[in-house]
Length: 129
Image (cartoon, rainbow, N blue to C red):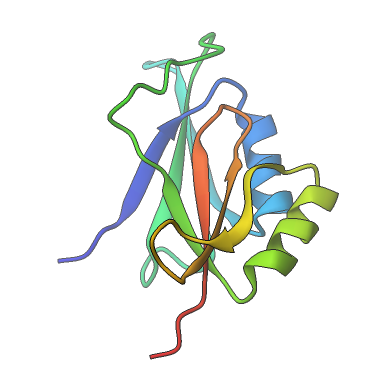
């Protein structure tokens, strides 16, 4: 077994795809409209779906916003250098909501940014095993 994808509902599919591709460097892998259901699915990721977990963005036609709720935590993405990643993402228009630095009660370097729909994304420094 393996995790295939995580799904997020978005209010503006093109805006979200721009964020995930331009700010976070993902690639749009595929997109499909479902006219009978009035929704579009777009899959994005850092590699082919056959070997990588990807992000599914779901746009329900005509729905412009969602409440994120208190049960959802965040998406986590590993980066080589959190400080450098934050600076690069700011230059691409990324909204950093927690600057790079050690996590609370730990030493792992993390930061948080927010996607256009308000979903938090944690950046975690690459671990050396």
